[in-house]
Amino acid sequence: MQAIEVHQLRKNFRIQQSRGGLKGALQDLFAREYREVAAVNDISFTIPQGEICGYIGENGAGKSTTIKMLTGILVPTSGDIRVNGYVPYLEREKFVNGIGVVFGQRSQLWWDIGVIESFQLLRKVYGVSESDFRKRLDELVERLELQELLSRPVRKLSLGQRMRCELVAALLHNPSIVFLDEPTIGLDIVVKSEIREFLKELNRTQGTTILLTTHDLQDIEALCSRVIMLDAGSIIYDGGLDELKSRWGSGRAVRFQFGKAVTAAELTAWTGGLPVTWTQESELVATALIPVDTAVSDLFSRVLGAAEVTDVQISETSTDEIVRQIYSSGSAEKPGAGGILHV
Amino acid sequence: MSSLYLDFIRIRFLTMLAYRVNYYSGILVYTLNIGVYYFTWQAIYGGKEQLAGFTAAQMTTYVAVSWMARAFYFNNLDREIATEIRDGTIAIQFIRPYNYLLVKMMQGFGEGLFRFTMFMIPGMIIAIILFPVQLPTSPVSWIGFLVMLFFSFLINTQLNILVGLMAFFIENNDGLMRMKRVVVDLFSGLLIPISFFPGWLVSIMNFLPFQAITYLPGSVFTGRVQGTGILEVLGIQVLWFVILLVPMIIVWRAARVRLFVQGG
Image (cartoon, rainbow over all chains, first blue to last red; front, side):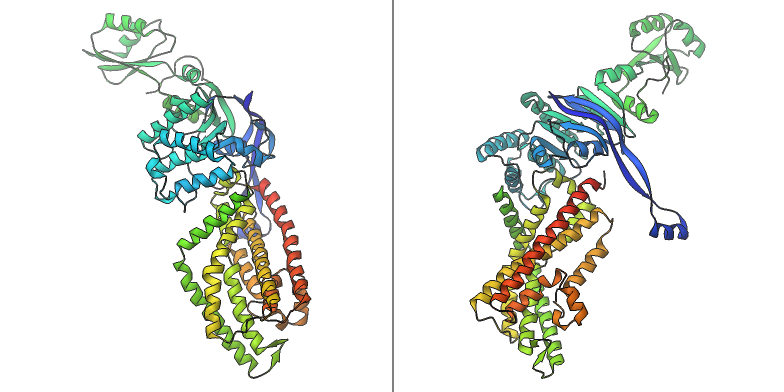
């Protein structure tokens, strides 16, 4: 069964246009001008049960708007959504029992009361039985090491402590789908990796479906088998992370340090016939970019046979780099054949 | 599920209790207000027996009980709701399987309970000591008044929720909230009893919910309305409570579709 099914989903927002100048301001008083902006533009995807899917895109790409439609907060302008078999905004009160949501930027705990009181209240909100609640809470508290935080008021928690409590709050009713909107924002590296480990384990042991948005691609690399990339309200990539890397990764960069000066002409002559692009930093340092399907050993045998090499470094394009390129080009279609050059 | 809503009452009550010191000054301010109006009305009466159906003694009682009733029914739910809408925390309310308006109502009631026990009762005792307030002698008036006081709270809270929800439709409803506060204080009969208004205004007031907040329960407390008359004025309150549910539901439904979470 599919956990999430989205078909031709769209959300338009009406943005008020202010006209400039005094005259414009007066006109605005009586007749406002609005502009329709599609925050989410006819997107479709399905997520099967038990998958961890990363939902990425630049600020304002429409990630949060999608999450808010999937969780029943926003009513879509058009299109179909089914999450857990429900249409979220229609059967909201029944539907939200089966999902857990964490907004990295908003707290769902009650500011003025203790952490454990917040959890108790949530137990009642979701109608969880006392014994289930105890069992689940003990597990989560142990796993996330919250023992000494339980009696503190929420407002006295640090961000890392609060975020771990937010996770517990979202999971107390044992939801089958969890939505995480930037769960690691602003956290230090230790808490981040704790949370990643925790989510991975949750997915493995309970089969929980997880959809998360993030700007930290390490979250994606650590957790997700699949990524959906959004740009300006449209999906520009939907598939495996590995596939994204191999499709977009511009191969490897091999940086050579030579014992004596070489010229650009020499470099190209050595690798004639191989799809290699050279960039020269100085007379003694040059970098060769080779596509994924070319063996590094071929390059080595040519260069090492012809020149005196003192040092070699091989680096692969990082996911960050790949995503940065896609964001800046606004499309996940790989540009024309032949290695592109970037230093 | 019902124990959930009781919990919201309990938690709000306890939270208010933690900040109770803030309300000690409130008791002083309300007593001061009663004093100001007491002396003003004394001057207006200037020895006259009766004005607009109020005897001077009834007026003193009316002023005291009206202000102290306000100490109970007043709350800031309008501001709370507007803030939650404006800063986007309303989103959190939508991911929970409960009725937001009911939760707000319960929180308001938790605050009301606190105000009743820690603010209205002590304030009333001080007012009785300082001013010649005449307490009702018949138990029917007492019961009638207390039931009506509860409906004052309900109707005032409904108006607050309605005005708060307007933040969904107008970006800044501060002006609206301020206007509502002035309108409620004036038209509920807190500042001037409704019977002092010119005839045409009185007949308009009869078709508005505001008099049900202060004027009607005040009239029962002062003994101007007695016996079966109490049921009649209580009926008006119940009617308004039911009528006001309609716009609340309509506005809430419309807001769901319009909802636009601020700050992404």
